[in-house]
Amino acid sequence: MATTPSPELDSDDELSAFVLQHFIIISSWQSEKKQKEWSAPIYAFFEPVPRNIEVEGWPAHEFKCSARGCKGTVRRYLDTKDAGSTGNLRRHARSCWGADVVKAADDARNVDDVRTKIWPGLLKDGSITTAFKRKGNGQVTYSHRQHTRQETKGFKSLMKTGRPEYYLPSRSTVSRDVRLVFACTRNRIAKMLQEHSGKINFTTDAWMSPNHRAFIAFSVHLEHKGKSLTMPLDIIEV
Image 1 (tube, rainbow, N blue to C red):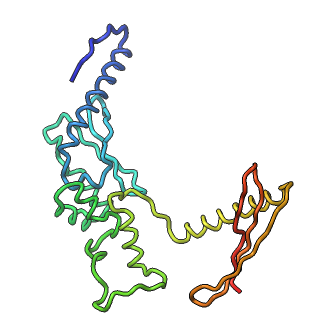
Image 2: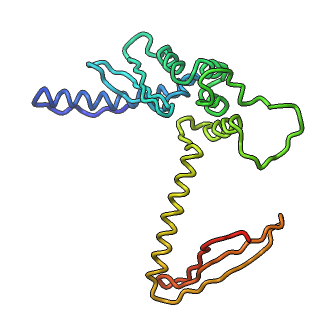
Image 3: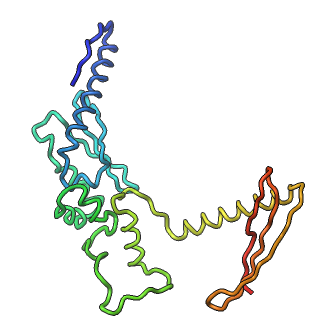
């Protein structure tokens, strides 16, 4: 690694700042180098790149847990004989993710295997294989009914594959946000049509769906900012 000549420093504060700056540069370089050696499955439960910090003059890596809602961190000092130990990481992972999830991760080959095959956040405790078990031995069919709780867990696990820190909103949150967006959009369109100074054309269309249900659609056509604009306003079943 290339080095630069050290400038002359006039005060203790400048000296401390100079030493800290070089510590950060060296620590960052060491972190990038050591990341290639961090292949143990336990690293999958923490953010890939740790922070380089200094605690009372001692250099350390600070690993942040990637579980949603967890603000916990694990420090590992770099100037000790057990600088590569994962004991503290394992203890935090057990308390945050669950013992069975960590145990299942131990059977994986490396970090990438955990992030793609072990689905964190699925179960707090209990067997991780529950999500993969087939329910019943009958014929597999597709149903339009609402997803069961077990199926919802499987969907969440699928969405979090390789991205355990991602947040998935609940059904009530999605419903609330969709209704809010619809209300705001409806008010904005109504205001735009009411304030439009040109001509506005309305059209209707009716059709029969394959399941023998009749629908009527209402749409509006106008010129907005020099361009033709067409929008559906409503669809009702008759």
